[in-house]
Length: 158
Length: 377
Ligand code: SF4
Ligand code: SF4
Image (cartoon, rainbow over all chains, first blue to last red; front, side):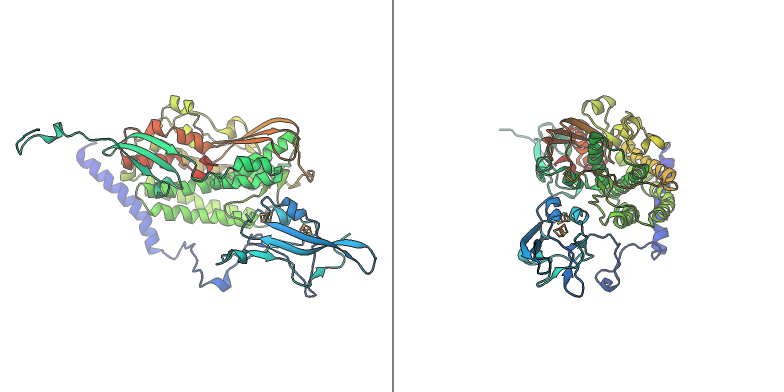
């Protein structure tokens, strides 16, 4: 190619590229994917399966579904879950049964792998849609998932 | 002592010394925390020495402690841009060792997600490649399309990068109800964009001048160094695991293995651009007829592999990922080794970068498409 045709060709390729950017410059609203976080905090939507952090839902009577079987503790790859359990006497049947005292969850170690949720036989724990999980103190990252005074929902076992 | 006049030709007597500079660990152009010790003479590179270990997390050692189900999610943290494919490699190995046959549905879904992962990885690479040679716009464009794929991932499994969607025996859940619709919408949106990318960067004269003839990797050294993936195919050597050792649903789709002959930076660039087209082609063949079937085969609560050695290879977006397990019949492997594509691809850097200028060097490492946690496990 000659000297001048080289220059003309070069300019042409630059202009082709600028045509693309120009198109978006004038249609800037068309393909916006960014969000105005945190202004849109109230309207944020999450996919159903979003992995925020592990939590244990309780019903209105302060009952949960955790039997203390420790399947989640075993499934967790990094020891984020600790179950402290005891055998308590069931007044109705008169038998001693396993029940959780504390379901401790260390968010600081959790990798959000979801293995504990899948492992739980009674669907006692779920992933919440919380995502603003930063804290100033490391101790704020340890949660006791069962609420104080909560007990096992009737009919979960068996 | 030397005397001279003002008009002495000083170049004759002035010799320059070689000196060493560090590129990285915290350098934006190394895409992570890779430390490269460059020996340079003026601007010309004389020697490149990668210094690894900055983000070593001893994943292979942790694997010896964890059980087989837990190992899968660790591979997310290796090549985080191909996390689904990494997961699949471990799952395939376990399934083959235990002789579990997963259903066609699982195979097809895995393949579709593999290709979406490949597109998303190549999109990120494309954006960053442009940025490395000074075209910031591409970064925004690449990430814009990538966002749609990430949304599909997020809906499918709840995570955008570290997916952990594959489990030994199948998938963690079935796909979500809008999966087919969203994937089709993405393909429709994405196809015209590829042309835009070519207008924007591929044909750009400055980009061409900066990449053509730079960092030529010959066929022989590509084979000698064990380079794989698009980097190898840019030098014209066939190495696509999807073709050579088909896994999942790759034996039932047709696609082309892309080759270029030159082996320079621009050829490696073109291979990846064309691979995205092929990925679209693969997804199109599968998306309309995802067969019905189980998404999770029954496995024992504690998976124990039989005694022996097992190897499984898959094609990630960067090349061949090999998973090697020695099992002594217990619930965790006796030894686990990952043959990661990034490590072998990095090893060739001294061969192709010597003699080039520092500015070109950035373009060269960019088309090697390195993901540092993959190199440094
Ligand atoms: S999500 Fe994974 S890492 Fe986190 S607590 Fe559950 S099993 Fe452990
Ligand atoms: S949360 Fe589920 S898996 Fe964990 S101890 Fe309770 S019932 Fe068992």
